[in-house]
Structure formats: structure tokens, C-alpha cells
Image (cartoon, rainbow, N blue to C red; front, side, top):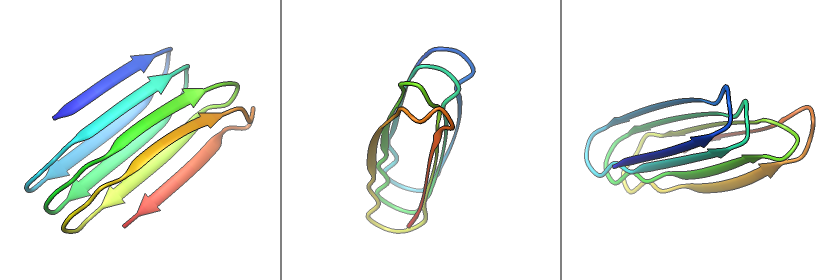
Length: 88
């Protein structure tokens, strides 16, 4: 399952899932948000909810093993933008 909602302009996303469980829900609110999700392995799960409240979000999540799961909800108010990178 992949559920993607994007409100605003110039939002970018890249999702690559292989093997087993899959799931990825991406939600953008505002413009110029970027999320990259790459999942390899068994019981994937990712939920991202990014809101641009004055600054763009940049997120990258890479999960490469067994019983994966991740959730991120971020509101960025920094005009220079906010960035998160997770590798598990």
C-alpha cells in the first residue's frame, strides 16, 4: 500500500520498496517538501506527515532489515528549511 497526499507546489517524493510487507504513507502540506523513502527487507512500514509552515522539509528514510517501522510528523517553521535523515 502506498497512500500519497500532496497539497502545494513543487513537492518531491521518491519511494522504492522491495520484499515482503510494504507500507508507506506520505503526506505533504505546503510547498517544496521533499521525502525519499527506500525500504528493503521484510515487514516495512513508514508514515511521514510533513507540513511547511514557513520552511520546507527534507526527509530521507532508508530501512534495510527485518521488522521495519517508522513514523515522522514534522512541522517546519524555519525559513531555511528542516532536514531529517534516518538509516536503520
